[in-house]
Image (cartoon, rainbow, N blue to C red):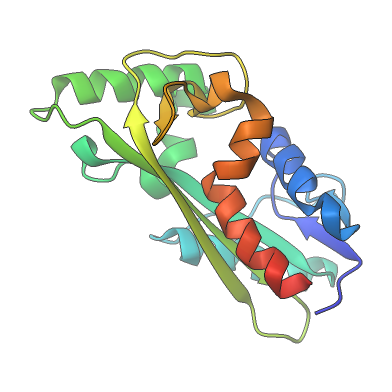
Length: 194
């Protein structure tokens, strides 16, 4: 599959920067939905795949270009997989500091001492007149006792990936981009695009 320009179905600056970095080896021009003044697509799906497909298909039809959509989130065992597909909306006013505090309080008040969690990512690549392709990635870890680190975005300050003793927000982009859920999904996408 030959793609020269790709629209990322997101207005999240942190996510767009991460995707641009991951796509850089392919020398594909990456722009965001914001760059093209495309509105957000309402996420009405109940799974990461449904939401990713919905966003990619809708925006590809609107702009006539290949479109990459990601739906990802944090799934916490003690909270029965929540916040999951509602990760962004789980944070009050989409303020992740408040979201992390809310999540830590919920874990504390749950009857479980289990702090296991994972980030999931589902990428959907929609190209005009072609079948939408889906790629999934996951990284397992645990929830920290309190936020640590200033790097990254979203729930990175409370997520410690397996094999490390620091949060994504402490490890920084270089490490995170090698092991993250998004990276693992992107490895599958890059194989397809090469």
